[in-house]
Image 1: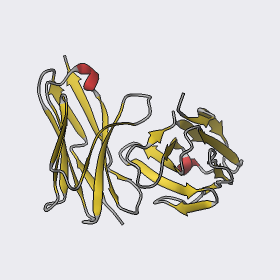
Image 2: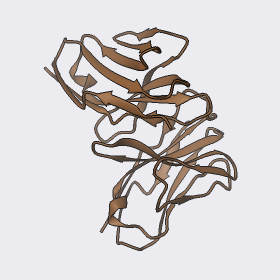
Image 3: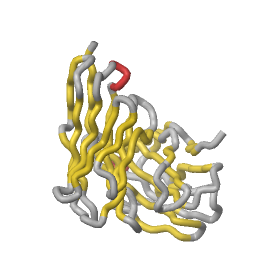
Image 4: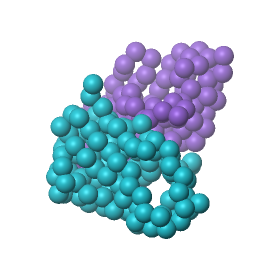
Length: 113
Length: 111
């Protein structure tokens, strides 16, 4: 089954404790992206990747890192999480940047205390 | 960069009524405008989209219209049903740029 998976789905952590949210797709998509969703602010892009070893900042990259060492995986790294990073995070992928359909993962709800 | 404004932020209708959600965009180079539906606790899913060379597109009870001159596009849902209750996001994208989303509209359809 074609899908985008994220792990963990729920995470409670404390300020400053490094964490990684994994994202994986099995559709051989070139383009992958991370968004955060906050009430009243919609979906805001954090980072995106157009292919292996090609990543770029989105609208709200501060406090986040990503890597794209393999085509299928695009982990989101929070080196020193802070409470303002409490949010719902979605990974998404599509065939290419110009492709029409973007497939979203199930979401990761993060609470930073 | 692109800026997408979406209105209203909440919309309540009676079952069977029509619902209209409007978005404006700032970048005249944007050429792709999708709409996503997000049910409670679920991921966003693409429901309809339109390209800049088309003025209107329909899919059963949903339709999207685009006015390039005014830089706005709208989602129309006819004969609304309770299962249409969700958050709807519009988005815009240029040829070589990423999607920019509106802030979302929470649609509530009352039986």
